[in-house]
Length: 279
Ligand SMILES: N[C@@H](CCC(=O)N[C@@H](CS)C(=O)NCC(=O)O)C(=O)O
Image (cartoon, rainbow, N blue to C red; front, side, top):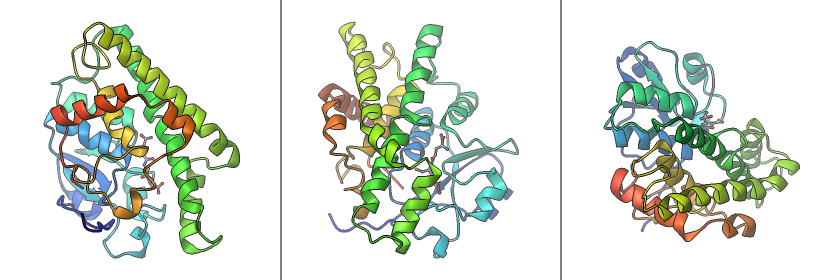
């Protein structure tokens, strides 16, 4: 495949100023050809529910603010959503939802079927616990992102503009030598717990993390695995620059990634998510 740039996008995005004038569901995604896990998870939840929305960019194309993606200087995004990360879901004039858990609850309300939250309390408690380990602060995605930032910075000369971009981005999410040292173990713990959950269900003849019904955790797993092992190029035409960064080769992380968990992603994408991934 040919070189893909971060700006090779296909979805039809509107600006924040335009989005503010529109009713219904708008999702600030950023308009970058990289499979940011929280963005892909949010898109996947909507896709599985058949929930349509207007994709929104974070800053004007060509602005220096957007050269390496979101970088904390997005004034319009801060003004609209009181924070500077993506995705953000905005439904009519309700408060913006900028975390995965609020986004899931909003999506459930707007499109109750198929429900992605288990009805049984024990399963629900377990699903949100595992989803938090995967998507929440200091979880798998969070720590994996710190490792990605560390990898991105490694070959760069200190204090150059790219180095400083990664540094600022990483510091926003707690980058430190201690966090980098802890990251592989925390990620491996999460993988081990997910694998045990899936193995237990499969032993009972079930196909999903919870019984025989798709849940949000299946979608979170399918999309967050892309942080350490991207989908093949034909399924995920991501920016070429990012592919090596989204490939985590740390032996502790790899050692905890089972064939069962990889096969589960394939199953979930094949049956429930959009392929190829569209940015
Ligand atoms: N806020 C989300 C996580 C989303 C998130 O952290 N997005 C990152 C992408 S990796 C982002 O947009 N960062 C932009 C920035 O920090 O400038 C949540 O907690 O569920």
